[in-house]
Length: 171
Image (cartoon, rainbow, N blue to C red; front, side, top):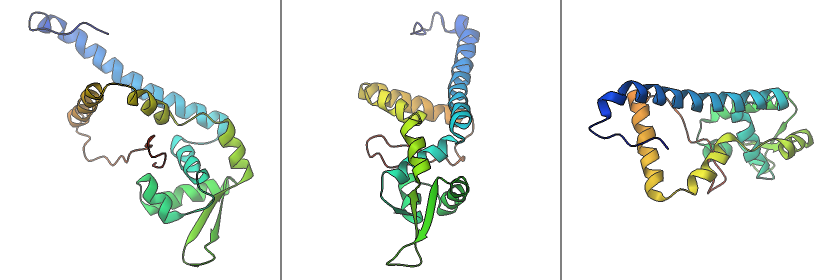
């Protein structure tokens, strides 16, 4: 871990601190990008598609509206992604036998085979490591990340939590 800044060394290290901070942000975006490219190359899937498929696989069958609720995104977004996954032969849609208005989603054997070999979503591994930190450190990291979002004027960007490791049921 880098040394803590004090009032004595703060001005001397500002340019270095800026470089380290920007390098850390680049490393985070690069890690996400590399994981996404690997998923795309190896399985033809994006990270969000993998998360969606994992969530569908946790249920024998699930409605589009329930899936949207569980992963905290709009039903329209889920429908759009599901249409792509259906064209890829990874999910099937059918009418609910009790309520014909509801569309039910299930994974296909091809999907199950991919899920057996695909790595866990990047955020799942991150959350597992994050959960092992002391609560004070988790709160410190959360506060710092929220501050970075503010500094980047990114508060208005919609970004639902992609995965809740405790509940094992969000997008």
